[in-house]
Every structure is written in structure tokens, then in C-alpha cells.
Amino acid sequence: MTATAQPTESSARHDVEGMNFYTRKWVRPEDLNANGSLFGGSLLRWIDEEAAIYAIIQLGNHRVVTKLISEIDFQASAREGDLIEMGLLATHFGRTSLTMRARVRNMITRRSILSIDKIVFVGVDEDGTPIPHGYTTITYDRDRMPEPHGKIS
Image (tube, rainbow, N blue to C red; front, side, top):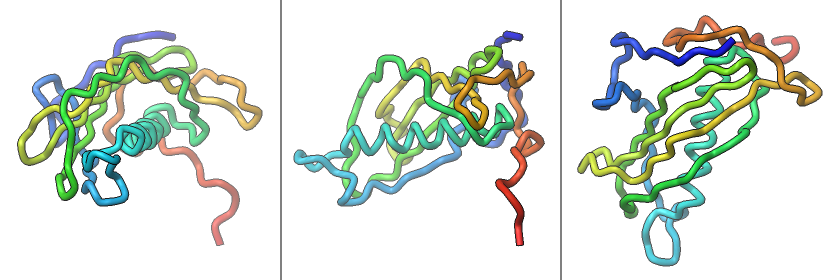
């Protein structure tokens, strides 16, 4: 089953493209490179983690893996003390995958820091084999949250 995801106006924070900017990070000293600006590796780790959480919710599976991250376009930097926000938008549901777009911007200046046009996550089973998810649209609720791991005491 494949379809293009269609965002709705029901989400709270939107960019002009309909992208949600929910996650914010404070640039701290441990996030800096030798030039005193935000280390690209820290930023990519944050994006990958945020995209994984988004994929878990959208695919209803706590086992997701990063399949592909396309060209990364660093457009500006951030400095210690800056507040940045990350946005993700689902663009396509494949049979076992979810494709999304990512943007990062400075919260104060609204200047774009980074863009990635294609991030693909695949839902897998306990053996790491891709499994179909059956979804074709974005959810803004927690209706697809996977079941907890094991018993809760």
C-alpha cells in the first residue's frame, strides 16, 4: 500500500509548508565543534532520534530503523545559547516504510539551519525483518502508539 501523506490543519505549530515544529533544543557547550558553532554530528543525532520517534508513532511499531538519509544541506550555524527547533513532515507511506522531510531553524531568528529532503524509516519485527504497517495517512493522535514492552508492575 502506498500513498502520499496529506497534512491537516489540526496540528498546532506549522511552517509555511505545513511542517510541525514541536521539538526544541538548547545549544550547549558540549554540542559545539572546534569553531564554537553547533557540531553537525550532534544536530544529526537529534534529527535521527526525533525522526525515529515520529516514525514509531506514525507506523505504530516501536521497532523502526533508519533506512536512508538523503543529502544534508547545512544552510547556517547555531552558537552556544541559541534555541533551535526541528520540524518533520511525513511525505510518503510505503508498504513497510515512512518517508519524511526535516528542517531545523533558529527559534529566535527563524533562520534555516539545515534541511533534509528525504529520511526513510522502516518498521521491522523482532528479527529485524521489514513488516507491513497498513497506514496511508498521518496521525496527530496517539492512536498508533505501540504496546508496552513486557509487563508493567
